[in-house]
Length: 111
Length: 131
Image (cartoon, rainbow over all chains, first blue to last red; front, top):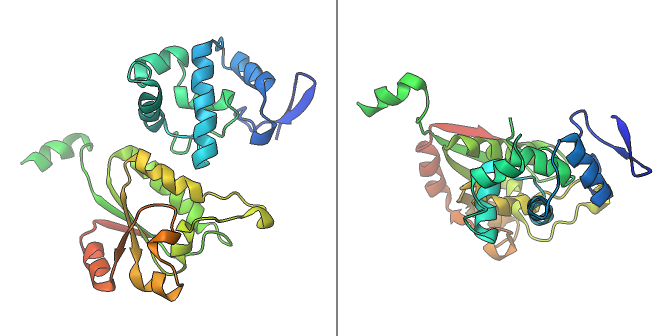
């Protein structure tokens, strides 16, 4: 699988650019992935990214977008747990793009 | 007839799917692959239930530590099923008894069924897929 150099560290990514070894993740990697995805990271983006990392730590999977939306609504309130808000942050799919930035695998059930 | 309307575009048909899990969590890929299929099926708004029987009951055990065999412990993922609206989890009473397990040993809330109750539940299904 391809290797990329991120802030002086060699990391392995899969053919779609997702981080292979979750434990290597750090903020530099998140920023690199965000540039790849053409996403400018704000505090609102970080909130979702950090939420996903917590979700993964608890359940060992990257959630499908519908599940992510619902879970965010529960934790951060309905004004954030909706498609409009999340797609504004991550236009090419909140689960897909935010998972990549969070260093998670591509969501299960993401077709 | 409403079934006809639903048939026209192929959407809106809800079938009863049962996923039958019979194998230990590790050693073969069945348990993990079965779980992934269930998570994918959830996206299609079907009526999904999961059954754990024989060594399959071990999939739901608390405190699994798979570090020694260097594979991912996916047992926590069963706790995510609720978020996917998959809330019908059944275990076979005899399989639990034979292994000295009770509901307290399991990582999620389940319904324990006797063999005849399980047979009735299976008979109600449109599709039964075994892993």
